[in-house]
Image (cartoon, rainbow over all chains, first blue to last red; front, side, top):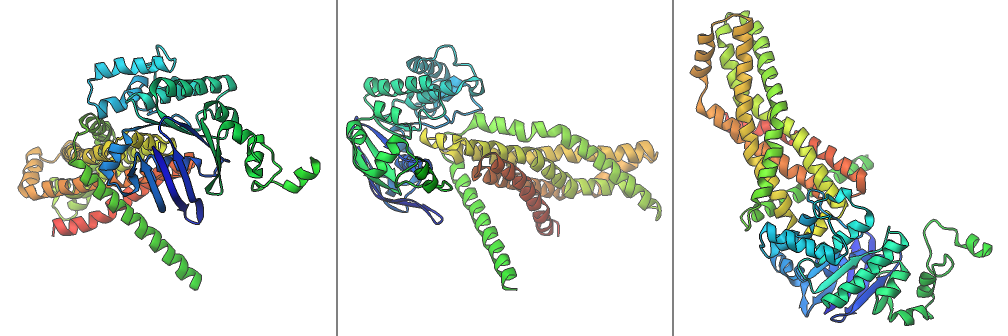
Amino acid sequence: MIKLVDLHKAFGSNKVLQGLDLGVEKGESMVIIGGSGSGKSIILKHIIGILKPDKGNIFIEGVNITTLKENELYEVRKKFGMLFQMAALFDSMNVWENVGFALMRQKNFKPGDVKEMAIEKLKLVGLVGVENLSPAELSGGMKKRVGLARAIAHEPEILLYDEPTTGLDPITADAINDLIIEMRERLSVTSVAITHDMRSAYKIADRISMLYEGEIIQTGSPDEIKNTENPVVKQFITGSAIGPIKIEGVDHERIFNRA
Amino acid sequence: MITFIERFGKKIIIFSEEFGRILLLLSSTLKQMTALPFEIKNIIKQMLEIGVRSLPVVLVTAIFTGMVFALQTYTAFKRFGAVELVGTVVALSMTRELGPVLTGLIVAGRAGAAMAAELGTMRVTEQIDALETLAANPVKYLIVPRFLSGLIMLPAVTIVADIVGIIGGYIVTVGMFKTSSVVYWKRTWDYLEPGDIYNGLIKACFFGAAIAIVSCYKGFYTMGGAEGVGKATTGAVVLSSMTILISDYFLSNWLFR
């Protein structure tokens, strides 16, 4: 369904992706883990065609999207729905207009019908009576739910989640995880999520891939990742400051001696 | 010396890059203008924002500019006995120069800043990325309505500014200095040619388009959170104002020679 082959991307001298390969099967839930600033969001933006790679190919259902023209790319994007880290709701619209945005533009439904459909989608993510509120009136968790309702409104085949649980309290985060699982079961979508929240990754993933220094260094089931022998993956999933992953500005020797 | 040349060269490269990117955005905007569906609702919203909401401040500026211009011209022209030409000078100045330029500067400060701030905030909060994921072209959805509104509304507001400025001149010349009302209007119409008015409006069209594209460019390519939005907003007002003042000379040279 999704195949990334030898992907390279640099911003100035900062090489973010350095020969990344990744495959996602139809109906699968893939979670990409990796440290902050490692380029996880960049992968999602490549998959949906917002960013173009410096080198390499991206195949969506066998179509190489790196060679498509702008209008052809917009057609491919209709297959996608994406939930952003901070939800990215449109400030100038109320909740139902946000949720119904794609329906109004892509499918030319009338505003009255779109509102009905948006209310249905909001119910699906557990929100009732919020359709006329503005995004500024919503809590962080509610914004994520509205963002999810907007992402699924046009019934996409692929859902992308950018840090779906970041910035939420553990209970709300777990509710979002349950929603992601429910979306996959009810809508039979293929999903790719990026996160550094391991609880969330274990819960929602069929397979987990670890991104490190611009490459995928290991892919496996949640159990395989839990029992990994790879020292980099091990350090990341246990959340230890001691190990091969070095954080800029942190005195690792001092931490090691103290430990 | 080498450091100075390096710095100067770097500035030229940055300027050329920025100018090139503005032209690319303009070309993309012109291309998207003809693509269906037309963003009628958005265009009307932006016309209200750029035109109607700028009117009060434009009216106040235009009337006082007309008044002060008449005041200065009257006292100067009195020295060589040409006070009957005050109406002519006010009308020519307003239609050819002050109407379009002052309206442009006011709209740049008001609507240009708002455009850059809104688009900049949308960029840093990923709303522009969200538009793309929902298969909506952000240039078509966000920039085309602002560009068209600038192009249409700036000349419309300039017409009002021209009229109000001439009325301001009338209030001072006739009301304060007690000259003949008939002479004021006669001298105004005698020497005012249609070319003065429509060439002034051509300038206004150019200024409107320039304000919109420069401000949208600054907002659309904002980086760096709240600080970036602040810089984009300031940059939009400065660059739009500079564009208006510099291009005004070349446009005047081309249109009025």
